[in-house]
Length: 211
Image (cartoon, rainbow, N blue to C red):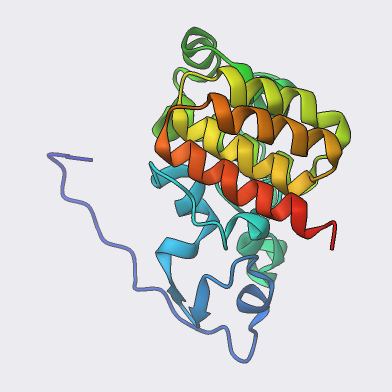
């Protein structure tokens, strides 16, 4: 932000967490590597918002159902818990669906729906394909057999290879005979090399559960 005003700077942050390490202990991906130090490439906020490409496979299971940012360190911090709650209408979501969108909807949303829903908010920073990618990962972590059909449609027909690849991973993570058949069929139909690789890895996950 550029201003033509002279502003009095705030005093430097006083680091007085003492022996408390709850944020380090609770970080889902272990991104807080030591007090006051975050390893950005493994932070869920970075992965879901800033990263434009493939999310490393080893980090996907640790992302839970977060699709835009992560507040775990804030939620567990005693200082945050002691802060006074304030309601600001300008910061309230437009609707409950806007605040907690359905993962299935995120996977299938069009560019027009994405723009209409999130215009004027920070969400476009992650772009439509990034948000859909994140939804696929979330379904792989919290989904069930009931989510296989929507993931199958995404793998077959989404216009972004990035999203198709993560949908393949989600199918492998959920597993089961139906997911396995979908992956087997799409391996023969897919043309993008990165998606084919994701399908192959997902099939390995499915077959490994058979023992």
